[in-house]
Length: 416
Image 1 (cartoon, one colour):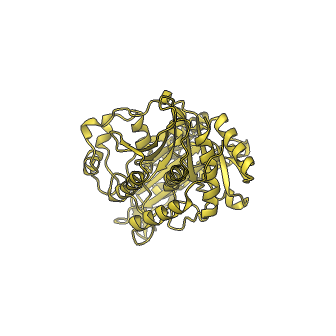
Image 2 (image 1 turned 90 degrees about the vertical axis):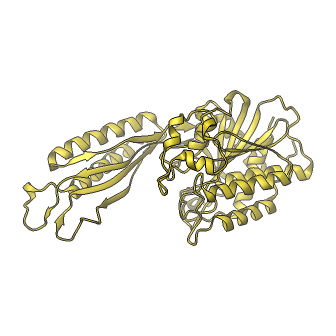
């Protein structure tokens, strides 16, 4: 099949508009169910109207932009990603997948190309759980996997519930929770995304073919509680030092990580928050409280459970040894997801056909593609090389690399 090339000029213009709309003075902020994300959705919808695509929204306000295919009764082919960002993030995380899908459909429209089946670009809501404490909120809601109690989740920055933010964006909280997507009616889902680590940059490769997405377990609001005391007057045996207990907990889990990684196990561990109370801490005080968070990721569900048990055991042991109380708090997380072997092979074949250097690799970060895979939809991902990591204003994706990744995406979306 001779698949027309994507419209890269349209992609460049859309990236520029998204940057203008989302710039916060430092980086890009497209707040979930807020003004930033809504502007991006409005821009995607405006472009879809210009391309005469079919437009639909579900109860969670996910956006669906469809180019009709020759056989409208056949299961649809889907692509897309999220349009929200972390605060002061970059312009490509998530958005690249939506822009790529629209560039493919625009190129097909211009060439008069009609795909075998409907092709839908999905712009997903609230993928970044930094806003609401819920992994994959938008994509899970699309499959009816989010209960109505989620309407009471409070956004981290405003403290207001999801129901209010949803209504402000034009949604109906009373309809929230209804399933829109049926896995049996989706032939495949392929997500293009920037790589959020250094692998492709280090190996001088423009694109990657994802083999699987790590699941996670997270304790976002862990605390260590001890007693404040004079730093010079209280001997070691009499202290209930929250900092010491927290540091020992970090060191113990880090030792576990080193041991398990040496065994060839897939695992990453991060303590992304570690702070004393600025209203009470001082140079001459033993700290009585530490706030911290724990983020553990692996492609292996058993590995996540094993580390969770280790963390709990360490917390109990160290609390007793240091005279403190260690509260891990509520656990959240996501399930690991393997990408479909057939979709991986199709992407690899397209790369070989076009002479594009690509490697297969795991995804350490979570993506909406994981939800599709877990629902039984044949799912794949294309990574595009990205300098300077992600979740920061310095994200940098070269448009030549984006063009190669989007070329692979177009071929697989057009496959009968």
